[in-house]
Length: 241
Ligand SMILES: [Zn+2]
Image 1 (cartoon, helix red, strand yellow):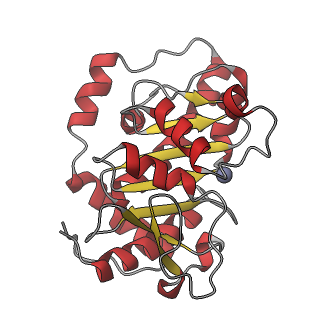
Image 2 (image 1 turned 120 degrees about the vertical axis):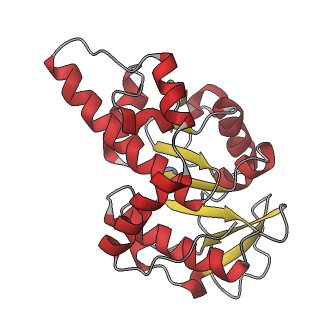
């Protein structure tokens, strides 16, 4: 199992990478399940991802209550993370973002599907969660566990979901995996729009998606991670766990 100190450093690096790669801007966040207590998770205090340091990382119960806030204000949308960790024992890290290329797919009925091999990790098709279906007119933010659980239910066993008029949520088996999927969800959305503008799109077949996904190992993810660490000005840690 990874150590707490390792995961806190990894989480800081992940925030900086997501900012550097334009997956988050001043908003958006990434969490990791606590290594010693699966009923807890780690997430920064409410702060822009590119500014986050180790002292910003807070511990939460799955319900979203801070364990020892020490005066730090949490993100309003932390319930996304707790609801996914609660529903999915296989999920160890969650990213929530408002990355720009995915937004149009959440509002048009046009589904994001893998258009190239790097996009296979997003799943066969990215489902769209519409908060209005269950909760009516809201500020669109996931600000309680009922909304978080409804989103987690829509996501099912998948790795990705869009949120209508809002953004996207990604679930991974560790921090690097969640970042990897988030980066290529944005890239796939951007390229899919370019392709659709040119004409009919031939997406990856279902079998191709399965084959590429089964070959997406930590070897390839770590290759990307090393490059992203360099771009974000962060030291790459030897992988744990
Ligand atoms: Zn949001």
